Image (cartoon, rainbow over all chains, first blue to last red; front, side):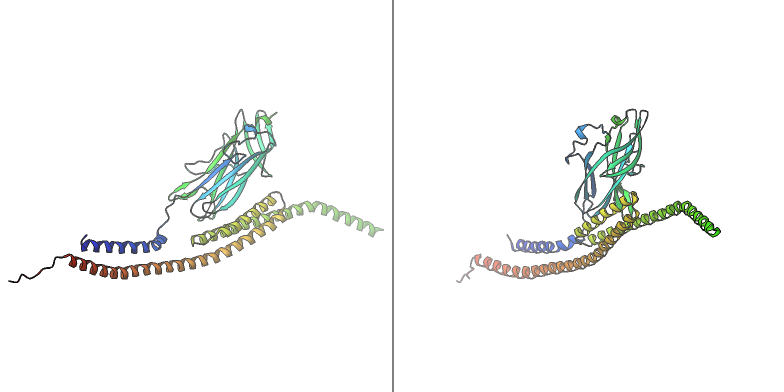
Length: 206
Length: 172
């Protein structure tokens, strides 16, 4: 190796060491590149994605308790104030729209709020049962639902083989408007999370 | 005799008026209670929102907000109880619980503002220290690099000179 080669090697090593020394300072000014998202899921009785109904029968009787677990995960890079809204719909009522991120127009029968830290997973036990029904011919209206011990009024009619469904929507507190909004922003896009589980309640008729 | 009759008549009339008026007053009072309770629950919700935003700012400044988030979640549970009390018509309890929520949220907000100030200051100090360390590393790299290179070059040249064959003058 000639003296010029050694000179080049020395200068290169010095430059690399200097760059490495600047790296921690430079890192504090670089934006973090993560894709923010939130996850909402409903788990069955044993905290798994199975056994959603008592005896695995989607036919829910009056007063029969159904136990689920709500699963929430925050990967937004910072704490998030969220609200999960439970709505009871029949097959014909509008469900939330994932494309436009618009919620179901039905009123929330139950709501649970929580502030989640970044990277936090939260499990919330959700137990519900049908408390009150109103029967008109072949049609059945669930008028009362007990959710975690709180009896709430609902109004959705189903009949002729139609099913009911429990819809869970994830609403996130919006800093700009100071109110909850269905979904969250990612760049120019809005993203949302919701879930639904179908059940029948015809056996309570008659 | 006549006076006694008048007194009895007046008291009967008063009782009838009282019976007729009391449901109206009662419902008005009840409505007022409900309105107060609703307003207390709404104020508690606003306080929770403000507290959350302060916590978010503290987190963005680099503070550890896990304790504040735990306190906020305690306040949220109390808010749920306040709302349940309101829905079941227990307005006094709802007002009391909502007051607790507002108080708890206020405490979280104050702590978050303090944490934000502390985190911003700590961040500035840490950045300054890091910059000083980086500058020192670069400074010593240049100094020792230059010295090292000078020493290495001298040794290299001496070795190269030592390897060169000796030239002797060719004398006649």
